Image (cartoon, rainbow, N blue to C red; front, top):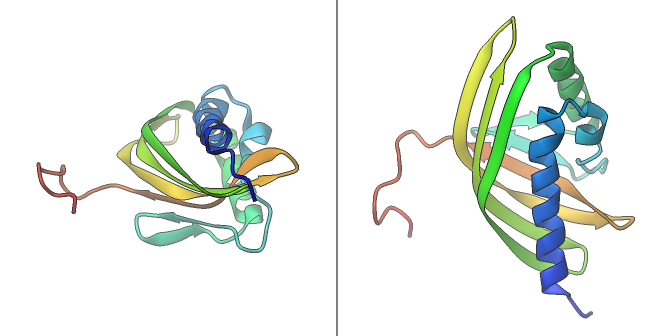
Amino acid sequence: MTVDKDAIIAGVTALIGEWSKAGQEGRYDDLKALYADEPDFYWVENGRVAYADWAAVAEGVDQLAALNPLLRSSATDIVVTPLGDDVASFRGAVEIGLASAEFSFDFEGLFTGVAVRRDGAWRFLQGHLSKPDAPAGEGDAR
């Protein structure tokens, strides 16, 4: 197995960038396609499983689309760790804001997960979003 680390890092970074842009641009079908439709899929938010399978993600994206929201998101400080030819872990900082006629929210936190390459395209297999209770202080990371 020869792992092209630079290509994997670029591919997963591009996946995260597309995830950030697709919702902002109202490309909800494209957004759904970024998640792996596989039995091992799951997505955790603030310590709870938010989506246990791809169908749940698709339903959540459809509900989001129905709100016709003004959505902004960004991911920064992205670190990708290749684990094999077609799998990598990732982490970074994420900011998400949503405003619609029904409600609004702002989220600033951390983003981690596992991405897999299927049929030449990178997809999220597992993901985690969390919001720290308080800003991290110097020396908090161990």
